[in-house]
Image (cartoon, rainbow, N blue to C red; front, side, top):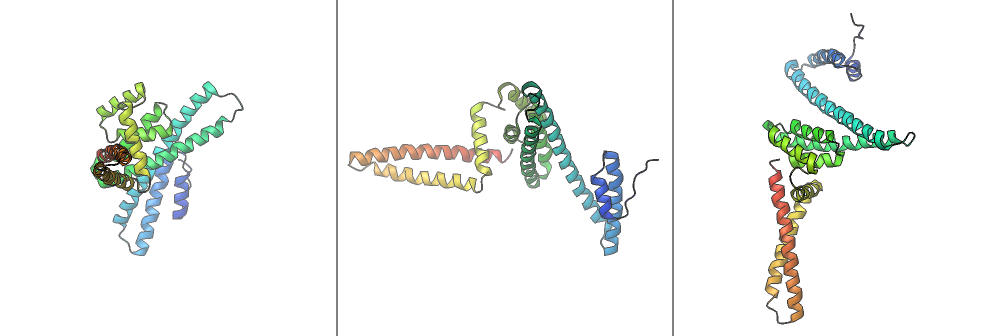
Length: 258
């Protein structure tokens, strides 16, 4: 019989569960968490069935999130370990660099997971959380850095297994899920959208350039050659800016389904 400590309080049960060294021990103490939590609910007159189920769902979400982060850390450690064996010499400070690399990987994993949860809230049957996690983990396994893996995972989006396999093979061969230019545009669009007010900035740029284009086109009727020259340059610049803004707007709209 295993000599497992039996928790007497809810706080002790949480502590023992979080410090468990195996899934079996964690499940063992999780049962005590449920039992002690139900006792607390009963003492407060709360319906224990509903509260227990809600608590169980929340615990499952938190556990899957932590398992994702653990897998990210493991893959990152393997990648940096391979790199250090090939390039680092003893005593060169590789552990500190590896720790920094793992922290970067976790930071981008948090960003991606937050985005995926919001995506799944908007479309509950999309399975966005699992799909984006799959994208990120598989790209990390290819040896890509955390930043590249984050943007590649976002660009690939909610791809099915067959589409994802083709994209992954393309990343393995060329470094891009499609070709270089579409990936560069989509990545830039994601970077802008991640900025506070990024989409508003693009829309304002588009309408401002449209206004300048209309004004400059009307100014071409002026008789002065200098004014005609500046008006012509304004038409060209405004047209290019409108084109760039339109490309980003279209990319934003397409990315809604990713």
